[in-house]
Amino acid sequence: MDTNDDNKKEAINFLQTDFNQCFNQIRHYDSQVFDILKFSFTAYTTIIGVALGLYQFGIKEKIDFYLPSVFILITGFIIGLYMFSVSIRNRVYFVQVTRYINEQRRTFLQYQPLNFLNESRMYTNHLQPPYFNWRSSQSWFIYIIAFLNSLLLATLIYLIFITKSYLWLIVVLGFSLAISIQLILGIYYLISRENKSASKAVFGRD
Image (tube, rainbow, N blue to C red; front, side, top):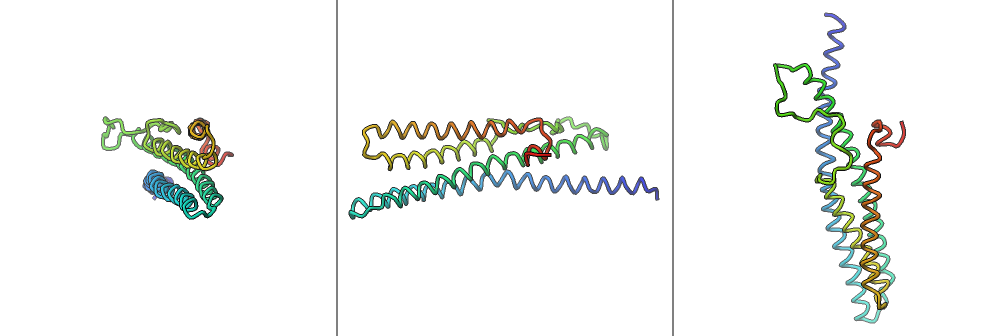
């Protein structure tokens, strides 16, 4: 048998396997953000409940639990920021692998195998999806995580300034700044990934 034919068959087998594996990766990345969101809801509810409960219990029993409550909230906020960054990075991985799948599909469909015309216009654009799409489910999960982080920070500010007359002003201001800064930095990072090679987009270098 011709060596070129053998090489072609090996190449096709490789791309087919790679295509299937990439689909598994996409499912993983898509479900991972949802798992992060579920964890965040549970973790934030627990953290806020424990911090405020401990603080109120300390007031009732005349025990100073102020610092432990503040420490719990600070720790939770740091973990929340990490979860937010993981969600952003997860979107980068998802987009890169999806674009690769689209490129593979385009390569095979351009030969119209079995006269298949792709009249449904299944994705073949290697530049889609965009890294940032405000309507995507992953983006909405990111918005919610940013909201929960900001709520955690607002609770922390509430405890710190609880005796001040301008308490609610500083709480609202802190919440607004926190959610704005997270979303601006996150969206900017995603948009900055466009028009880069896979290595540059994912790892920051070629």
